[in-house]
Length: 105
Image: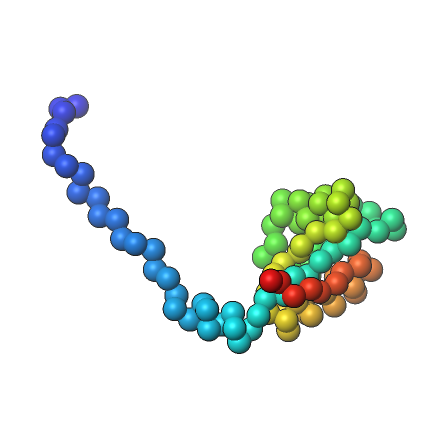
């Protein structure tokens, strides 16, 4: 390959920042859905329940959340607007898991 002294022509554009993000955070403040450890649900059941309760959750993410709750006593499942947090909490509760909601500061 011949060596060239030509400068790179790659153009980098700055990342686009959505100006509506701040407005949305003020109108729809985020809440955390917290999964709590318990002694009566198996690890595979918890992983399955997480994946069924939160759309698009990967197996590896569900496993990491389950493990954090198991070892630390609790884990953040997701941070989202209150209505979605309530929906995800209810789904987790329907699988027999213990889940709460807290305001995400």
